[in-house]
Length: 134
Image 1 (tube, helix red, strand yellow):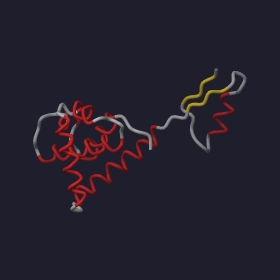
Image 2 (tube, one colour):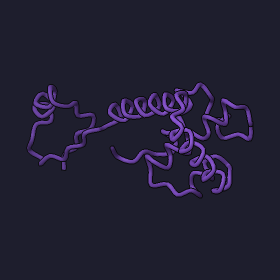
Image 3 (cartoon, helix red, strand yellow):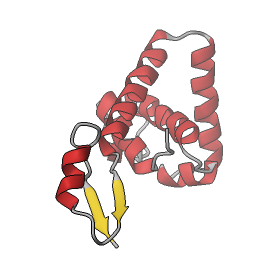
């Protein structure tokens, strides 16, 4: 899977956990909000090339807070915490599904090729959302 943008991960975590993006990025310390924040850190680190500093900046936090979140999720996975495992699975499934929907097929064709014929050809294999001519 291609690496995702942090904003897409934030949206996915927000959708699945029911915690708004602004609350995940806030200083709120309610259990549900903090759990969503920890999950964001986990997915941001595992699904992107973002640095700890970049992830922390996204949450208005220090990189050491991100490290703590990653350790907490790792510990929860190690003790086989069902709630954490279920949340991770739901978010991962959501990300995979949304990622598949977001794929755009871009084809560059020679100037003399009929775009309509190409679209008809691709109809059953993949839908071309963007077809350009040189």
